[in-house]
Image (tube, rainbow, N blue to C red; front, side, top):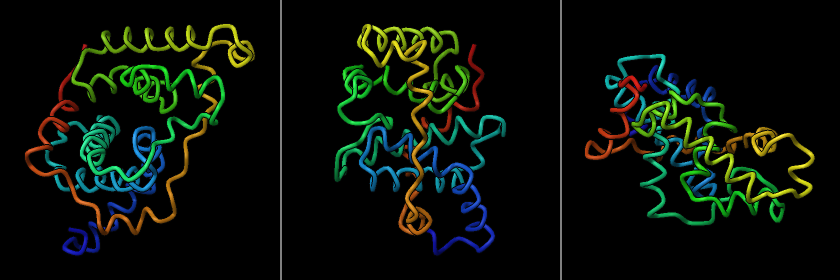
Length: 204
């Protein structure tokens, strides 16, 4: 697909990569190995261009990109070539073990809310849910993480489990990500509808 795009379009996608590449890669890398996460993030950027007409409210761009990345992660997981590293916690630490023990949905909600700083409304758009429902789910996930951490040294050194997560850095995308755009593909028509419907809805 990349070779068929105009130079102006390629430049626009490259600007989007520079603006969102790191965060999308980091998000995808929480469930995919690095190479697969890189390809999924690139696919999300190409999907955003290919189906730009589906985004009627530009203020929802960030939520839309994450929704697209999430859809690409689901597709890429079937051909995964390695092991994800989780949200940047050092291996063997209490936090890393507690995060691994969380249900996948709770771990993802904390990833989006705490590490990536998305609002409840933005997360609601990604999951096609209500913002109040998301708020409760995020609170439950944070409470569960604190329960798993117990009163260990990791938690006593911070005020809350969320404080621990906020200090986990967003991982930089590999330098090869720009080149990977040339082999990534957007979501096929059968898959893009659900991923791109939610960001144009208003959640309450």
